[in-house]
Picture 1 (tube, rainbow, N blue to C red):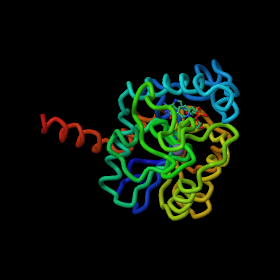
Picture 2 (cartoon, rainbow, N blue to C red):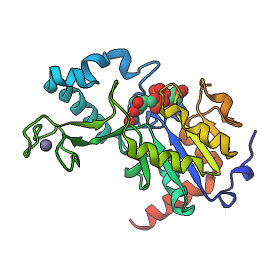
Picture 3 (cartoon, protein in one colour):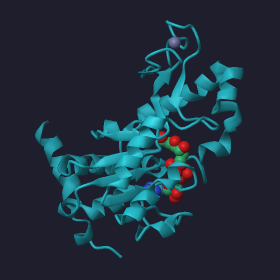
Picture 4 (tube, rainbow, N blue to C red):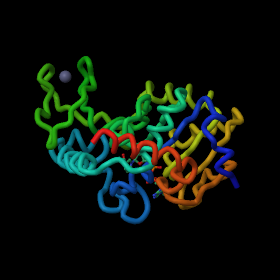
Length: 250
Ligand code: NAD
Ligand code: ZN
């Protein structure tokens, strides 16, 4: 078991937060797997692969418009805010996320490697390929330059991973001294494999998840609780500092 002393921020220079859908579950966004998970109600073969998009792009866009609507309507959680605050205090802090909702950035975080892309970008094959787009529903679904349908810039089932965020994640994780995994089931590969690099390096590895996962053995510290309460327990001073800073501006 760890104590708050063990996780005191002055002890670390390079921290990585490795996050998944459980982090955003506290904001009201469903996880992918398990009870209430998205793939329990929708068949990904109809909504989340290139083949479905080629068959019926409007149907796939309607599904993603709805996801944008939901993701845009929620607020970042206390855990998202604490992570951003850690990053302000420890300059070498990086975030590697499987989430596509953009909530880390909305909480003020920077240096976020989005392994599975972002629902707030769209792309086609002509340069610059991916562009930011926050319209809900999406406006121009065809690219004005090449005329083809633009798709969400996220990693669907059967898609290859994007090399840039993977490379950034590998670099960050292989040199971190503290890795905190939060709200990820550890079953979606290759993303799930990345924390192993921190284990091999000898970093302190902490898993925050109410449930055990198939990769729990990799971690030397397990915190079986929800994201926000757990992080607030690690660094009670952080959220209080942020709230008073926000209050001071009012
Ligand atoms: P997952 O759905 O497979 O697992 C979620 C995990 O979060 C579970 O292990 C669960 O026990 C845990 N969890 C639930 N509530 C929690 C809480 N309050 N605090 C901490 N942990 C909690 O999610 P995953 O591992 O991220 O799976 C990866 C896939 O899910 C990726 O493809 C990702 O793109 C996608 N996804 C993203 C979003 C999003 O952007 N918000 C939402 C759903 C799925
Ligand atoms: Zn184009």
